Length: 249
Figure 1: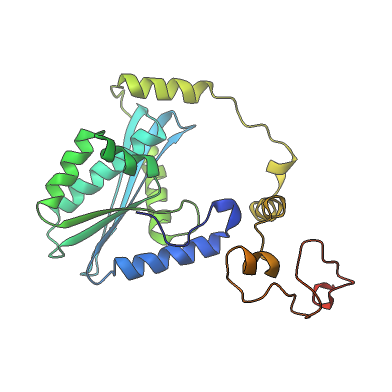
Figure 2 (figure 1 turned 90 degrees about the vertical axis):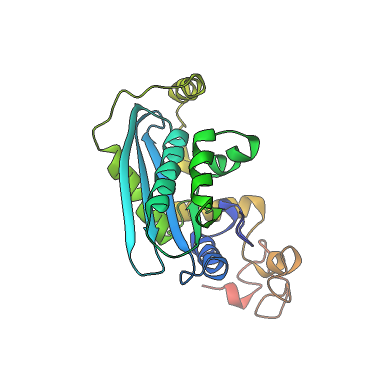
C-alpha cells in the first residue's frame, strides 16, 4: 500500500514524489492489465457541503467519471468513503473484461479503517467487486500532481457544488464535525507567507535533510562521495562560496 522510496513531504520535492508514484503504478499496475480508479472527497472547511469524485481508466482505452454531492453535513473523511463506495459501484457495473482493479486514493485513514473492522458498508461494496475481479487498495501521496488524482480532486470539488441534502449524521461523524468546527485556525505567521518552494527549502535547512553531497552520501547513499564537485572539501551547509568555487555566484 506504500510507495517505495517515498519520503515525508517536507523532505522530498513534489516532482520526486510524483515520479516515484507514477513509476510504482506503471510497474505494479500496468495500464494494459489493470483498471485504474482514482477517488477523492472534500468538504468545505472539512465540515460542510461534501463532494466525491471518481476517475476510472480501463485497459480497453475508455474512461468513466463521477461526481456526486455527499451532504450538507459532511467531513472530508466521510466524503472520501463515499467516493470509494461510488467507485466500487462503478466497477461492479462495468462490462470491462479486465479482471484486476486498483483503487488509488490519498485518504490513508480510509484505507486503514477496514483492517480494524470499520466501514462495513464500504467493505461489502469492495467484497462484491472481489467476486468478479482482483482488488487492490493503493495509497498515493497528495498534492504532487499525479494526473488521475488531480482529475478525481476536480470531480470531488464539482460534486460539492451540486444540490446538497440534509443527510443523516452518525454519532461519530457528529463528533468529527464538531471538533473540526471548533478547531483553532492556523495562525498566518511569516512561515505561511512563504511560497511552497520556499517553505520546503527552509524545512530542509532546519532538519538537515537537504540536497548537498554530505547528506546525500552519508545519510541516504544517493551519491558516492560527500565531496563538493570542486573537489576541495565536503559539501556542507556551512561551506562558503569563497571556499568552494562551485557555490560561487
